[in-house]
Length: 320
Image (cartoon, rainbow, N blue to C red; front, side, top):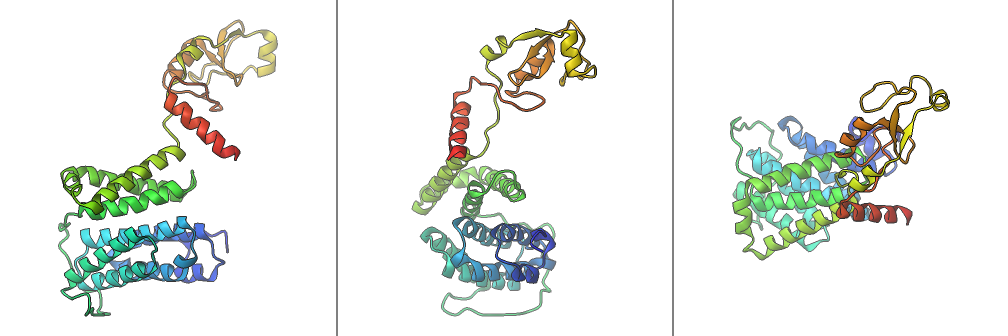
């Protein structure tokens, strides 16, 4: 049971399992997809609310960030897709629960903003809030997509960046949150004039500063794009000549991994530190774009000091 993935589980299945933060995070990602559709919105938002009630107080900082991100995503979906009163009532209830649970003052303040926006949509005051369980029978024009407020985009981006920075590399969750962060960053770029206008507000300046700090944190822990190999290293790569003895040891079907042509006796080849061999004319174009062996990905030094510093820091963190 524990090996089943979260997107294969129903909510009741998840509740019956021993608490597993990884599965809860994956289930949250699945729920965020559910709330994108009218047919599954009610179930999705209800499940997110229950997860917050059951798990937030005892959750790790990483899971708390995932839960907060899910709530921010609900706010974005409501603002950009759905106009029905019933949807906004459910959203208001979720924001109220999140506002009670979150400890960060900035997050609590944004939840209050979401509650106020929901009350405005519902034409109710904060001290007299209606509760309704009406059926989901409203419709909205298929081409109606209200503009998403830049401040709201910034909050969801900040929440998503927190998840990306705290997640482990190579997981499906990491890929999903990275894609979401990229989409939100594009939304910020599309509204760059509004972003500049927001900087006159103290709260918005704090958000921009937090996003900047989060991006710097991600740069410190996430992989950088690999630069080309060092020119000096390329020029000084050893050249070996294939002998009969070497061919017998390597096998007659040995080939250059770049051009896929078989190597021949008496042929001169470049040898990388990992001992893999390549034609002289094949390896240099590869290393002019990459800093690793085409076969085993063993890395060569580069001339990029920023990348070398990042790599050294990564090795230090791995050795701790």
